[in-house]
Image 1: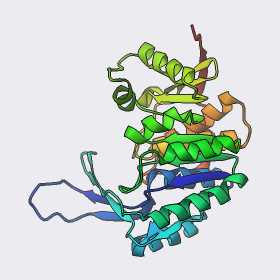
Image 2: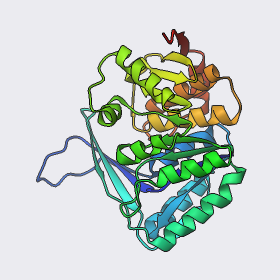
Image 3: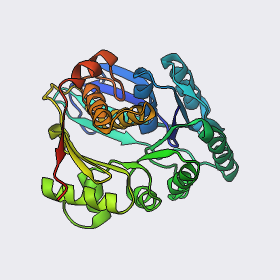
Image 4: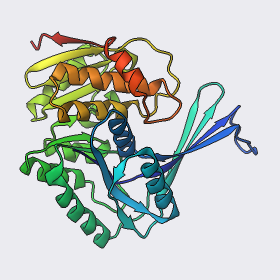
Amino acid sequence: MILVINLNASLDKRYALAELTKGEVMRADSVQNTPGGKGLHVANVATILGADTIATGFLGGKTGEFIAEALAGYGIRHDFVKIAGETRSCLAIITADGAQTEILEPGPPVSDAELKSFREKYAALLPSAEVVVASGSIPQDIDKGIYADLITAAKAAGKKFLLDTSGEALKLGIAAQPYFIKPNKDEIEALRGHRVDSEAEVIHEVKNFLAEGIGLAAVSLGADGSIVGCGEQLYRVTVPRIKAVNPVGSGDSYVAGIAVGLSRGLEMTETLRLSAAAGTANAMEAESGFVRKSTVETLLTQIKVEAIDPT
């Protein structure tokens, strides 16, 4: 089973407009309301790919009820802690020129009692999990070290922990040595305090992560694929050129592919191929955090995974 943690879920509202003008009344051409949060994207894609998956975290209010009902409709198993606060909404405004403007709410407060309930639920779900994924931001009242705590518990139970977050939560999480991370260039620069511009610099940072105790480290190169390190081996993963419709959620889909590959015991090259295919397939869809299994299967034959000389 893949256990997916989404502490700061959201209702994602996607508005399509001809244009966006400040200070004017704007009318949307269309609106989509879908369960959101990076972890829910991971859970959705892993479920589509056929993996036994369960999502947990916090849900509250009418928005939380809507998300729970939608997840059930998608066939996504879930076991969330119900909180008193209202689950946040996040708005994405897409204009005809392809620009996307996002407004992200901070998320509801979480009480000490609600946090204790989550920790108890995590402890109960952990023994059945083969892989644990924690994705996204942390609610405003929760200590940024919570992911580090969850990593420590997962490692003690012999579970692989995949972490996809940013800022202080990522820094503290890395110190706890999760199995997998996927920081982008901006996140690496924030962690290291210097620019990362060339592929050689990316490779250097991947090697540094491995030396710090990370089992599997991936850095996206956008349309050029990714650089990945695992143990003493480095890989360059190249993806086919596609017509991107909506790249939002591609990183989450990539993480889902990693989780599915690990849960199935695939060879590392095949796991990387699956993750790259899932991330690419997501970019071909209008909905964030969604893939078509048939598209992923087609893309698998077009993904190139090459070993890089680690020296």
